[in-house]
Amino acid sequence: MKENESEVKMLLAGDIGGTKTLLGLFEPAATRPREILVRSFPTLDYHDLPSMIAGFFALQATARPTIDCACFGVAGPVLGHQAELTNVPWRVNALEVSRAFSIPHVSLLNDLQAMAYGVPLLTASEVHVLQRGEPNPDGNVALIAAGTGLGQALLHNVNRRLIPAASEGGHADFAARTEREIAVLRDVTKRFGRAEVERVVSGRGLSNIHRVTHTGACKAGIDPDDLESPAAISAAAVGGVCDGCVEALDLFLEAYGAEAGNLALRSVATGGVFVGGGIAPKILPALEDGPFLRAFRGKSPLEPLLETIPVKVILNAQSGLLGAAFFAMTQTSSNEH
Image 1 (tube, one colour):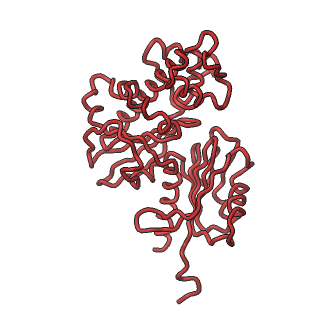
Image 2: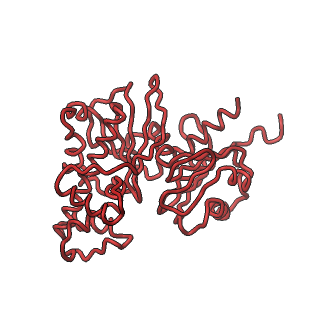
Image 3: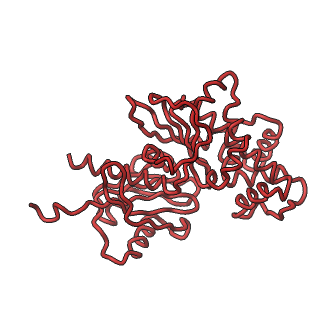
């Protein structure tokens, strides 16, 4: 037997977001990577990914493990071995990470594509059903996730095998459907020059909507420029503290549901639509209350189709990290052959 032949090959995974980044060590397992250690880092506390990885390894009490494969989901388009994050002043280079930490195989995925790799691994307890529908085992699956920004991904069904594909659909144009949404469209266009979906359907999008629904002072005392304003707006709306906040959340839910329905139609996602990101699990009662699903289904003449599509909220906050670890595990397996 060769030296270290029986040594467990470790995986390094990362989910790099606009606000926080998760880094984790995993062991390969039969179907789902086994978590060993996960840490969360404020993304902007570090000037690049290698410095964050070094900080992650420094937190361990034992010697740095040997990493066979690594994969990082990044919030931005991946071109070759590089990615420039959309909402963070970082450029990530897989080759630089490989050289810096002597990792033979380093991959980059769009963050939603990474999350999509985790979707088939989720258990029933890790999702919340909004619409049961009638899942088609031969159908495609779609993923949409609002957080700091808005991400989208597709899982193409090829012979009942789901193949994740990246998308930058969150930066497509916002399609206003009502007079109130047209008012949001006009305000966002005036302020930013263009109304992309992310300017409306995201945490910052909720703050943008808040500006339109308040002609005077907010009764909850919320400043939409405050970084914590999205959570405050949601809380004020759920608590009925401010009518303007209630309207802002309703408009947000309708825009979110409409865009989820658009994605379902574009991908013919008869296998289901998954709603990820940090916002959805925090507002589950509001998602179930009507505006989201009403806008999701309200696409004449295809309401009957949309009513059959399962819609589920992802409750596992580490689903993107899990997907990145799974992708790294598949690269380990392929490199053994």
